[in-house]
Length: 331
Image (cartoon, rainbow, N blue to C red; front, side, top):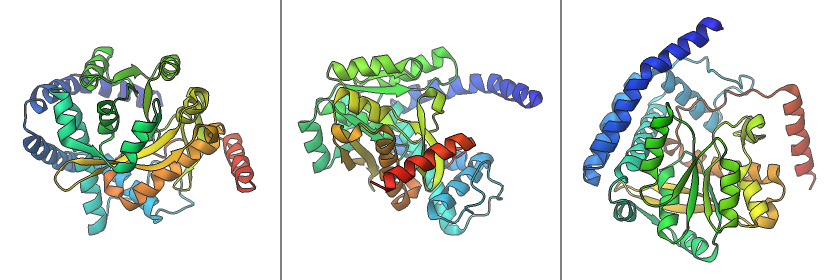
């Protein structure tokens, strides 16, 4: 275990300068490219990433088979043991997932420059989303790492919402600051994940809307709750339900559908009134079920190479989850 931890620390140290180079190059290169050239560069980089990311491909295949129900139920925890032997259909989906991820990251860098004009050119809201944003200020918008997750808050900002989002620390403090500055170029406010609770609560009370992602692992000690995600126990943030209930604002579960021309259409999947958000576990589970439906229909739009199901519940956690499920089923 000690050797493993030392090795991980060593690899993080070795990787750090390359991460800086990648981020600085992204800001410098992507920001000056026309949109079509930016998309072509993203597609080239995604093809290279697919070839080089051996471990990520295994996670992608395992996650894809969880989505389709082809991963053995009894083998429910990570890391996956299967070899990377996808069918042609599975390989195509995984390749497209890498492309979608690269385009989403490229979009974040590309909108560092002339942000308002570029976001307006790159995306649109469907009618339901337009109506929701015009009638509900502030609001909590919820999504996952599906489609282009960056553009959701950007479009909401263009339609008159003062938006706040959360950023996890990436690399050094200076690297995180650079990425946060890039993401705030359109005018939305980004706060660090550490200590974000008070800032987000103050923001909702002052009339600001929140843009939150809920498909990543969040430990219960950090405010996460155990829910089911594709049938498996999965701890995620309960923040959307908490802020909706406390701030008495509705929740919109949404995603950005990639279009054939490289643009995105933001669509609302479900609306949750603030009164229904009082049960934080039920609301969080509902948000995950909404995202499940989208991911099952569009698996190539989700970030498949993420180590999603790595967290294992204790027997007490699992008993609590099953008790909540029984109570929810008896309502």
